[in-house]
Image (cartoon, rainbow, N blue to C red; front, top):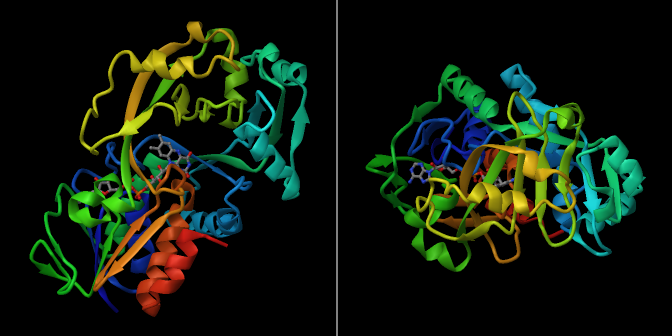
Length: 361
Ligand SMILES: Cc1cc2nc3c(=O)[nH]c(=O)nc-3n(C[C@H](O)[C@H](O)[C@H](O)COP(=O)(O)OP(=O)(O)OC[C@H]3O[C@@H](n4cnc5c(N)ncnc54)[C@H](O)[C@@H]3O)c2cc1C
C-alpha cells in the first residue's frame, strides 16, 4: 500500500482517488476550491461521450475501456450518471469535421443513419434544411452528468476512507522527497488541469492554457418538444467546431465552439462578458434556424490545456506523475484514466500509463 497525494479534484483526480482507494492505497486529495469546483474543466453540467471517435484512432481503440470504467464507477456510486441520447452529425460541406466523423462511423462499422436535409429537418425542426448537405445519427453516445458524478464521487471517497482537503491550494511540491506543502507521500499525482503550470512551470513547452465559454439557451416553446428528444450534436459542420447538448435535467440547450477560445491564464476573465452569449450563438446559424428567438440563460467559462497534437499528456519526475487529460476531449475517459493511474502506482509501471494515455496506436 502506498501513501498517495493527488492534486486537483477534476474528473482525473477524483477518478484516480476512486481507483487508488479501491486498490488499497491511502489517498489524500487536494482541491483548491470546493468539490465539485465550478471553475474546473470538469465542473460544467455535462460532457459528451460517444463510441465513434473520428481521426484519432488510438483513442477510438480505448473507448471500450472508457465505457467499461464508467460502468464500474456507476455501479460503485449506485447511480448511472449517463444520459444516453445518441448523437447527431450535421455536415455542411464535403470534408468538414462532421463529414470526417461520418466517414469514421462508416469505416468503423458503427451503427448510423444518414438523412437528407429534408428528412433531418422534419425530425429535428430546429435545423434549417437549406443550409446543410446531410445529417447522420448514431445511437451510441450521450452526455455524462459531471456535477452529479463529482458530488457522488466525493461521498464515495469519504465513505471509503480517502482524505479530502477541499479549499486547499497546493503551493509547493518536492518531487525528489515526495512532499506536498510539507507533508510526505510515497507518490504524488498532479491532475491540476489548466493550473498545472503554476506547479510545474517547465511544462509550458508542452501545454498551453486556453479560456473558453459555453452558452445555455431556452429554445422557443414550439421547438421545446423536438429539443427534448434530440441527441447530443457532435459537430454542426463547416469550420465551426461546434457541438450542442440538448436540454437535460432542467438546463437549456448548450452551445459550445472551439472558435470561441483564446490562450489565457486559468483564473483570468472567468466572469463571462455579456456579449459572449450572442457571439457563441452566432456560430450556430447555419445550420440552426430561428436562433434569434432563443433566450440566453447563462454563460459558463472554462479553462483547459492543449498539447500541440491534442494527445493527452503524461510526465514523470521522481515521485511525481503529472497527467493532463486535455485538448478538449478528456472527460469521457475520466474513469478509465483513474484506473490507469491506479494501475501504474500499484504496478510501479509508468510506461504502460504513458502508452495508454498518449494513445499513439
Ligand atoms: C468547453 C469544454 C467542452 C468540453 N467538452 C468535452 C466533451 O464533450 N467530452 C469530453 O470528453 N471532454 C470534453 N472537454 C474536456 C474535459 O472537460 C477535460 O478534458 C476534463 O474535464 C479535464 O479534467 P481534469 O481533471 O484533467 O482537469 P480539471 O477538471 O480542470 O480539474 C483540475 C482540478 O485541479 C484543481 N487544482 C489546480 N491546481 C491546484 C492546486 N495547486 N491545488 C489544489 N487543487 C488544484 C482545480 O481547481 C481543478 O478542480 C471539454 C472541455 C471544455 C473546456
